[in-house]
Image 1 (cartoon, rainbow, N blue to C red):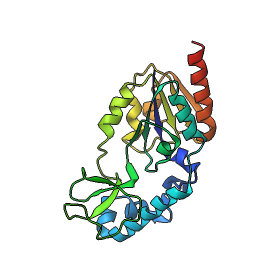
Image 2 (cartoon, rainbow, N blue to C red):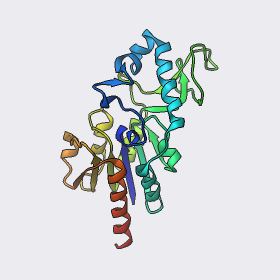
Image 3 (spheres, rainbow, N blue to C red):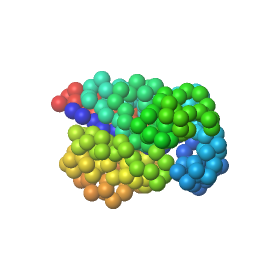
Image 4 (cartoon, rainbow, N blue to C red):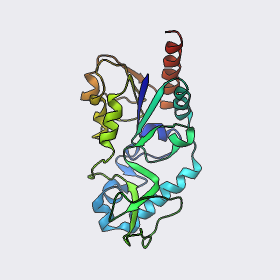
Length: 233
């Protein structure tokens, strides 16, 4: 059985990673337009690099939480595919094996000239750090207004789901918020969030279970239920 897990900022927030929706559209006191758009990058690349350098450094001070670890436990019983909107590496550090990053990754950078030239990156990134083509390296992040290159692969993953878990996301950021439309409408859907906002696409699902709970509470509960059900089938 294949279980697809779509995660958003809420699962990372419980590990101490700040989300911009927590503070009236500001992200660490920066406007999203200034640090998470192509236009912001063109206006002030130094500001953007500093912003993501701080985000990258923060990864060394946080750890996976009970929700990430519950997904790892789920892998022992099912084929688990994780689609995450998050750019941190907490899923991987928790031992989640099959993780697709829709919006990029903080520990990667890419060529400004060729987006297919992607490199692992652990330190700060500065103006003057160049790719082999001689162009500036930029954060490997899908900014607002940019295409989501991994979306077709995520859609194919969603098509294979026998169970669909949605964790810690407001379901307001598209196209990620519409991924459930690719799944079989008759499968079980679980939506776990302390402030669930069931969007139009999810509201069409007849087997929808909403858990109004933090990821660290709701995910272990659902995982335990799924494992117990499979063992007693």
